Amino acid sequence: MSEYAARNISHTDFILSGFSGPKEWKQLLFIPFFLLFVMSVTANSMIIFIILSHRALHSPMYLLICVMAFVDLVIAISFVPNMLLNLLFNWNHISLMGCLVQMFCIHFFTSVQTTVLLWMALDRFYAICTPLHYNEHMRFSAFLKFVIIPMLRNAVFISAIVGLARSLSYCQSNEIKHCFCEHMALVTLACGPMYVNSVVGLCGVFFILAADVLFIVVSYVRIFVSLFKSGRSSQKAFSTCITHIIVMFVGLIMALTSFLSYRIKNDMSSNSHMAISTMYLLVPTCLNPIIYGIRTKEIRQQVIKIFEKLHPKPLATVVSGKR
View 1 (cartoon, helix red, strand yellow):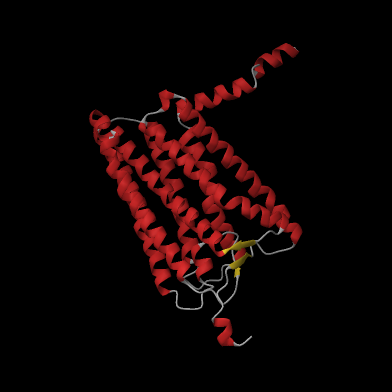
View 2 (cartoon, rainbow, N blue to C red):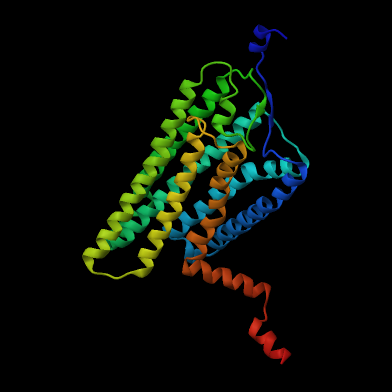
């Protein structure tokens, strides 16, 4: 086939190469990812069920935790099953449209994930710094402005990224060197210049991820200052805020490493890059239900009640009966 003919072919079917290595090694890799996926789906589904089924948990803070659990659930479902089938059975084909849909789901809901963290930070800020006006600030009509503007921003940027990727012609190769449809992993296969795609992608990282993280940090700093000035000693508040900040920054570092590895020449292997990208998406979906859900006293009590129903006899009773 001539070079001219090759440049006039745009692939509509792609192969997700996934992790490289022997078949046995990839099948072994299936186990930890499957366990993480089951943990994510189970924990987030339980959090959603508990909050929606108990009217006492329908306050703003718990509803935000419920939204976070739903977002984590969608992120896990959008790419992990396909990746597991690739690892176990080498089912690695995906259409261009399927790839774009997966790309939109992954990038949009990860952007919503950081936005929900911002909403949670605002909730804690109002609860700790302005407790007398908390209900006024967190009233749905008043809080709506903090919902509409970030969600429109997320939708516009992610739609632009996916739309620009759709407009490209893919004639270099149909092998995506990743285990899911990441934006730059697909765009690097395009024939023409991808400068605009790269710039828009970086703008999305800056105006969504970095901006939300900046506002979150400012909110927590204001919370710390308020606690110090008031002389209140709240170990729980400090512990919660510090845990949130640590988890957030670990996720931010992994996200930036994944995004920038396509734009900066480096010696990172494809397996290392895929592992970082996958863990950046999957690990938070497992940890968030614990950090933001089960660590909360009221939700933890409901989880304990569920397990007590599954196992009516306490362990102590069983042990004493054996005696």
